[in-house]
Image (cartoon, rainbow over all chains, first blue to last red; front, side, top):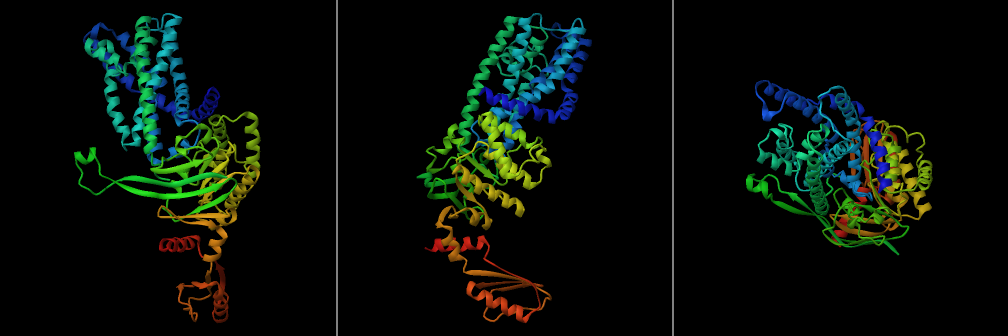
Length: 262
Length: 323
């Protein structure tokens, strides 16, 4: 398996490099976190939301932009197209399931796009005195782990919804509803620190917090090591649940795959 | 010994019935009808055989090939390929077969074909020495030298088809399912594909099940033919028997100098469109008909050929249905 991944990562990296101009455009077009930063900075001028100041929101949404670059995937579109058009047929002929190649492709795209973002974040953390950052090597390691967990969760959630394409023709819209809920519970619209305790507890138990809030908190050194481990534990449980769900749906879907269009 | 054994294979598709009144109930529980694509198909193929698998569009050829290669689960029946049950998709099984689909693309579009080869090397766990030897062999057989390092999107259709074929053969499969491998290719590219298949089978003693609408693909490669019509096997036997019997008919295509109406005594099947005349006659009559036209009309060109494969197939299928 190691040799398979090494080979696939090599080819996927070349593929990502072939689209590097598109990735740069995507990077520059990331406006949502900065839009939300602007909204919260406006609010801090009038009030003091949950006791948080402007510096908190600048750190939070800058890190959120980087986390987004490192962890956002769009593999649901790949699954949807492959299954609906029957293109999956050619991949089913191979002795490794297509998910391995999709994982390598997404990882290389994120690594390329994220490399620019993470470099910018480190420069900001070093040069801006009050900008949040991990306070130890251990905290930095937890930050790396939380980014990987966020990537894994995004990937697996989209794989699970992608599997629905074996039964449905509009899985991207169904996923849109799911991710709409995620916008609130992940910390995109409002940092979890600003939410009522009950809502925050629900968010932290959902798979969404670990896709944004947890990596942002660990990257900006907002939470303790113990708290990071607790949130990473929740993420790990969701990763296992989603992995089991994805595999179950994959095998069920294959039984009813019609390989249409060819 | 049979490498492929199919017993009473059936595969049905479920199709949503359209044109009904829609509503929340139908949204949640759409009405579906079952369409049988393949019904009770049985046959066996021995090691080293090249079998032509032919039939009209929608007859079920591709469905059978997909069931044989594990892409589709059969609705009922049993399939054994190389001792494996295909739809279980065991790794050792997938490493020993290939399915080449003429209209399907497995190459990475924006990268050179070589990178797709490297991806397949990783997926099939092909060792470096074996990979080098196989790519050298495929490069020679398919004349790929100059095209392997150009982005796939810049290749011609024929070059791409040859690269697709090579990518599908990198793991040296023992069983080849070829579904319209020459579709859309020009004559040279078709020849190259046929030569490749012939050479590959000779070198590796592979077994081939080949579908094609091009009679030349079948006649130049296969010694046995399976005909499928409406999801059922209508003929299973030697190609020579089929073509020899069915090719009693000849088609004369004549290009006239003028659009003058043409008549041939004793021939009813004559169609004229301007200066083009198409006549169907028996093999025994064909020479006399050609001589009559050449003697009585100004002719620019004339050709005599067997009927298209579709006609041969249709006759055979109709005959089998009546039997």
